[in-house]
Length: 84
Image (cartoon, rainbow, N blue to C red; front, side, top):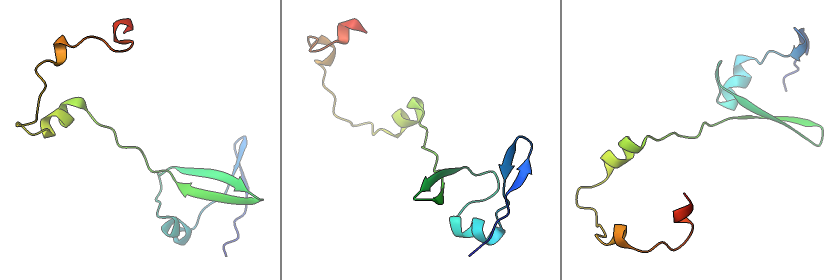
């Protein structure tokens, strides 16, 4: 078990995490952790960023022979489409 000293850091407090602990968490300097206290235990978890997508990239991946519905634009509204 690692014992970590809490030190003053400006108006906050901080502690240094040993490299071995970072490796066990699968994180590196610059990564983000989420912190939660559960029954008096501090839990740290690596924050996995959600992937971001660009519409142009997604459309470029679509097959050329994708099925289409030619009547789509002529269909009547069925919800709140008119309100948009």
